Length: 96
Image 1 (cartoon, rainbow, N blue to C red):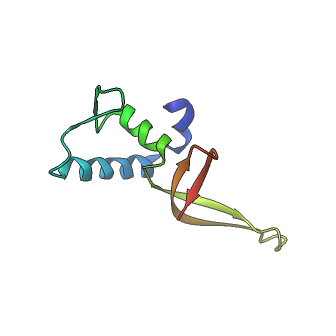
Image 2: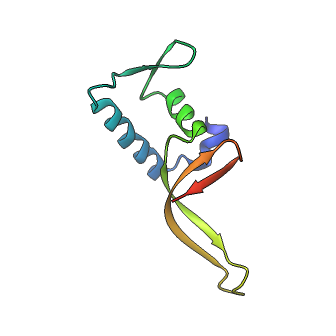
Image 3: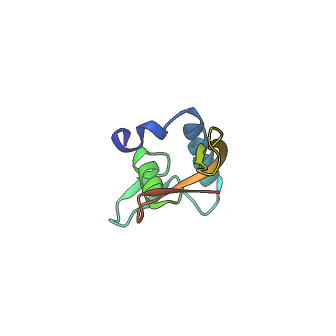
């Protein structure tokens, strides 16, 4: 987890994950455990579940996105806050 996602696991992403887990655990249809595809129980608040959600693109989190604009010399880079998720098919992030 740390090797692949360590640079993204800042305070904001961790807080977003904790909020996401609280929401899941508060839903009546969600218990504290969820079945994975291998039929073994995976705790919703576990690192394994977090990794699975990051890899599958199910977890959107806040990040600062750097955008380059080649048309403007000198002011060609801007930053904005966005919700992002990982797309494993293209090995990129999608922002909204």
